[in-house]
Image 1 (cartoon, rainbow, N blue to C red):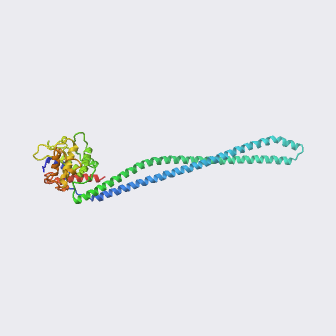
Image 2 (image 1 turned 90 degrees about the horizontal axis):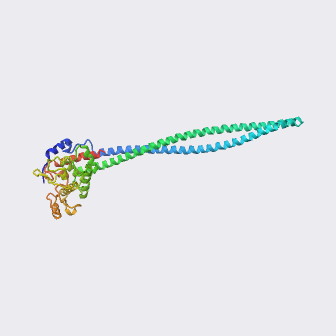
Image 3 (image 1 turned 120 degrees about the horizontal axis):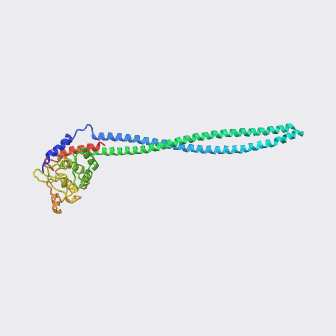
Length: 395
């Protein structure tokens, strides 16, 4: 179809990325096995975090149960102390009355003895009165001692409760951190699961060739995050970011059942890392991310009014190369007027009669006149994609 263009600029780009961008890199191990091992490690860490969380919950609940128990014991002690204090007060009143009676009756008893009443009986009365008074005093002292002991026990329980309150507060703070840790490990498990799924999908594709058609394996975030590791400086028009550009590739690819992640990779190669170093054939303002219309003898490539228009034309053209049954009537969006023709009828006819329809259902078949004249075109695109997939599955 067309050319080998921007040779020097692309050669420089590939050299900066290393030989891995030209040929599929050798792996130290099976990517699926490595991804599964990372998943198992993340699961173990998540399980350990969950155990720490559950153990702390149990300790906090036990502290609360102890607090409730101690509060009950303190309430009982308070009731017992109140009862003892009331009994003590009653005894003190009794003692006061006995003492007053003894005092009042002292002279009376002496007078009775003087008049010949039985002194022995009077003496026994005094002795009994004093014995009763002494017994009451001893009981009061015992009550006081017991109530003091209960108050000390109450103070000790209050100290235990205060200690438990502090411990419960500490555990509440620990739980907050453990909840954050648990959520973080859960996210890591989810990411590791996603990486394993990607590794499995990539492994399956590698065994049967890399189809142009199909759903993307890498997400827009994977593509944009990988781009930021390359050191490339994107020159995009209209305030478009690399994140927004990657999302456009995924959206347009899904619309026409073309793998947008690989189309992004192709564009990275074609534009020199979206820096457009092509000597004037295509510029950022052209929104031409695949060198459409550019060739060895062409002054300029095709121009598109927006990035979405340029990507849509690229995606539809990739589908034409990959799907021998592709027809304009089966497209989600009409054939690009900026690539296939401004007249809708003409554009549909040009799309339907494309001479190379179905020539390259896999990316391994690209190049050597299919999309590009470069015989190493496919290995360059796939080498870059391997770097992206390695990054995306490394978590």
